Length: 567
Image 1 (cartoon, rainbow, N blue to C red):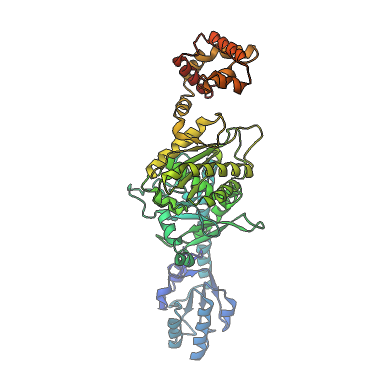
Image 2: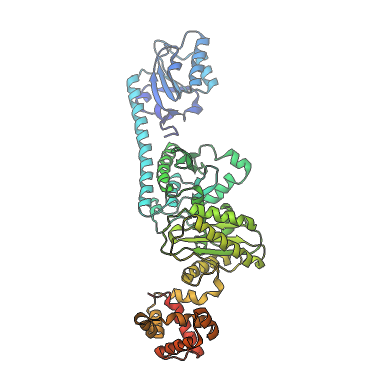
């Protein structure tokens, strides 16, 4: 079944109705692979004006003319119309086809067939049309099956990468989703598992790491990102576009008006030609993607989500440090030879991911443009997290860059409407600078530390290196021994504060924060010294501990920190 959804001339000649006429190809044999879109029978000289192209024309030759010039002109007009083939039944008009007719067909590259036996043209028409209709139905059925798999993947919790993976498996090649300007949003290659494995949301393809293995466990020769880089990396490549025979389908839904282009689905013809079935499947997938992309207000958010997926995959070890530079380069991140600085911002857990994350990404990137360092910023709306990698020139820039990043992140959160009155302020954690391997561990460490740091005293940003105790306690938050430790250390004081006034826990917190310096504690609490001494004595009495003992100070300090992470 060819690209335009018909059968080939060769296939038509092999059907019983035409085969019974003993067909002989006398010209254009090299074009028998052309597509027959329809069948037409006629005997008038001007029949070319009635045709649209792609037809198989049946005739007994009555309209071909008697002079050689008429016959050549007849063939020339048919070739200009782009018909698939001319089939002439020998009989009363011609016992054999005239030489001028054959020569004209050969010169025009038009398949010319003579039938040595009489056939019923109506039977030929009916048989070929049945094959064409059945072929169209088969194409539609293939496209609908792909569309159904895409829908099942979405209903199972998948997203854009899953839809692209289904298409990539069907096309047996890479699939890309780009902005109208050609910026890569998502990429996917064919998977190594059976077709329905692409619908498993528990093993999703990463948009930034779509390369897979084939059935033999070898790296897929069609590494999606490598193909995209080859197609789009240079100016000449961008102007040339995808190879001939590729499928490009617009995804509607953005810009001005309901029909404007939001993104573009690209199936390049890399390993094999793509036909009508691939175009139909891509068109149906584009409709599905349009619905999915309605949730993303702008193309920047889609790109930011893709970068967030890559940074998360890097942090969780799904991207090898050796592969990371190339994949980051495709996403627009080209750091120099200096260290990479991982940063993670985490929003308050009670906030929903309903703000404009595209505005957040744009605002932060705009602010950081003046810093003069490469930035790879992603968003993870479901987790309320914004991971970043920055390319430093030297380790000494860490503090200054961290200050600018924290300011930009907080400004972006405010502009994007991702804050709520009374909610905790976003937590920004800066990891340890280093190479790609360190960046992987640093992003993971910073992400966990950001979760552990929520509820601490507000700071512009936290150094992940100084919060190891908080992180350890956070990791133990669901262990029953941690809650038991807090109860043993602070239980009597908590019971007192639930029943009596003034509460004493704030006094203990400030006292320990100032390392037992009573003058500074009294000053911060706005208490006179005697009142503070009385409160501290009461706290020691309730807990049965000496607050001047270093062991007691350590125990109570850990218990106060652990209390933030226990129910």
